[in-house]
Amino acid sequence: MTSRRRFLQGSTTLVAATIAGTMQALHVRQARAWSGSAGWVDSPYGPIAPVRDLDTGLPLLQLPQGFAYRSYGWTGDPMMDGQACPSHHDGMAVVASSDGADLDLVLVRNHERGAAPAIAAAGMYDSAAARRTLAGGGATTLRFRGRRWVGMEASLGGTVFNCAGGPTPWGTWLSCEETLIDLSPQGGRKHGYVFEVRAQSGETTGRPIVTMGRFMHEAVAVDPATGDAYLTEDSRNKAGLYRFRPADTSGRPGSYEAGGRLQMARVVGRRNGDLTAPSRGDTHRIEWVDIADPDADPVDIALPDFDGPTTVSGPFAQGWAAGGLRMSRGEGIWHRDGKLFIVDTSAGVNLMRARGHGRGAVWEYDLARGTLKALFVSMSEEASNHPDNITLSPRGGIVLCEDGGGVDDRYGFGNRLVGLTRDARSYALAKNHIVLDAPQLARAGKRVAPGDYRSAEFCGACFDPLGGVLFVNIQSPGITFAIWGPWPRGNL
Image (cartoon, rainbow, N blue to C red; front, side, top):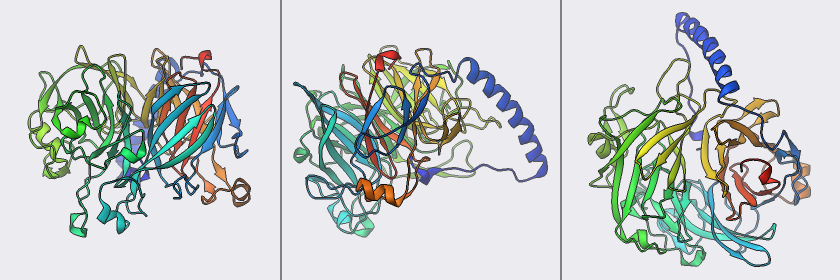
């Protein structure tokens, strides 16, 4: 999800450059035509403009008229347990709520950190590596009441690159490591697992759910009807789509830690289906193949589009050998009303029609029918520039978090929160407007470095159960936001 994985493209000869230029001009014309008809539209909430944070007074976000927000949990802010708030905010969800005079919420937030000072939490996984500042990832727990933030504390530590994850129907958070690193040669442990974080942070065990697989995890969504979990893999053009079937189907905190069976998706009647370059409306029937060893180490295998053997996760290698499908880069996933909405951040067809070099896509998986449909495919930067995390409002509207390094559009430069209309057209809901100088930070009492952060990604978008507040993070400098306004004016 971060700038660690930016990629470059280029030409090596004058002839290739000439061809690319011609193809680019054609592609731009096609993209503009597409975005004008089935892609980019004006927001139902109206145009966006800078809005000042109710806590710091700084214009950190661009939002539609009538919307307001409060920032919280900046990197370096003191937490209730005495630690400084960790950096690299990422996936997040509301895991608990109560309906008193004011809505009282508990959220869990990931921190996508590798080698960094450890997050000291009740739930610790790799304590040895954490002591050596090799495992600085984990999660923090936040509380929100009324329309104010009321506290945060550490809940998971000793992990690495906790990217996204997902909430469970039983009120916990599944925190996913996006790594294949093995720290055992340094006295630590293997990483690349999923961990369950409890609503009461002190009850978190720090125990890896090994049977959910060891791979470059991104996000997870749980089907409340069956308890099955669906997981995405963020590994360029070697990303599987997985299903975890728990042995303990009680739907209680800790039930996944009892183990289960991991499977990988396969397109019916099509061995090794390549879904890296979908067109809007593409539909596939899906079946599932078992992964015998979900904790298998990475291996080198031959794959199309790679020059020579390439390293893949152990689960992917097994699923691929059984005919499993691949995506470009699986990112966010969210469940709503019997369907999964799955983001592939670099899917689509680029100007040279290379696989998986597009601007991103959203797939809709119908759990009852077993069909996977390309609901939205971005054909231009304006339509959506590498969507990442995804969420749905209680009213059914889709919000995408961009991680494409920023878009220069009618509202200026920056990454965006993108909404999708009911017919899967995109619009700008919000924009990153964070440019900070030293005097501003001093007045606000913040400890982050001055700088232009508009290219930093949005992540962790989620709504409260009533749909009144949208929570979201900006990864760098590391800030969490609560946003509210006239949601019924549009489809969110």
